[in-house]
Length: 420
Image (cartoon, rainbow, N blue to C red; front, side, top):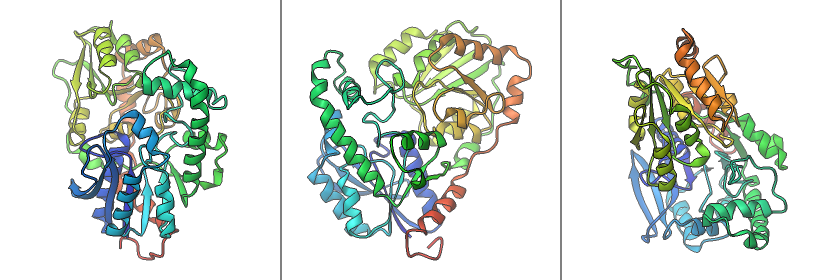
């Protein structure tokens, strides 16, 4: 089968959960004999460039700078991106298009594929189709309390895009635009033949906004387990308990809560390593460094996707202190593949992924005291860490996931021979 994945951004320029999942899925499908390509937007002026990344054919649609405004504006239309997508369809001739994310891309590309009678499936990695900033969290860290005819959406978008609190007078002007945006992206999502969700919590959020429940398929992500398990677990020579954060250094990820909770941890008993790109939100990272105790906390920078297994081999506990409704963080599956338990916020789908007292522990989000108590419990309670480690089960492998997707694809194509 000829499968084209469409995603908003892709390695090596961007490396996040959705991007890593898309890359590993494409590689997994190719290993089973499918012909696979990825279409995504990129910064630059070379228009459409056909390249290769880790053995995957990639169509990079260069469409100028990737500013917050240009990314938002493109949803309503972008002639260059439409042309690039048409050229990609003509060149690759997919039998199915798998939409991974449409942020920064014109929603009209959905209709472009439909006009050629190409089946479409859509994986929902976050809340972008019901939330302009994707995460259903307000700038004051409260979870979304409703749209208020677009006025609340305007507050979030203006705060995120303009980084200023003095934009209240623009909200009545922005609200109708965001309502139009919501109508457009919702209509595009519902054109897909199937909506795939890796968490039941996410399905519930979409259904509450009026999406039909019978359109969703629950399907957990798969991961490249071999990439993780090639590194055997290594105990620290000094016996300290090793906590690791792996992810974006952004306020909604709650890393500041973690850093503050860890401040008074005895450095001879525990160490915290924080991995993430410090250049995306430099002022936030500066705040993190100021809050952290350098005696027990270190900032390790970015880690290549291929090296995540090495980091987890030197980890006793993965920490996920998110403040927003996480959907299905790939890093949790990666930790489980390495046999590492997880401490996570009790919010969103994290409570689906982590079973409290079984393969990890759950904490009240945004509460420094709760996080400190949980981390101290792991150090003080004999046998707790060993109990959690023993109950970590291996996640869905990419091979299993590809097989499940293949069965779904075949419902919408004429292909009757899996793997072809």
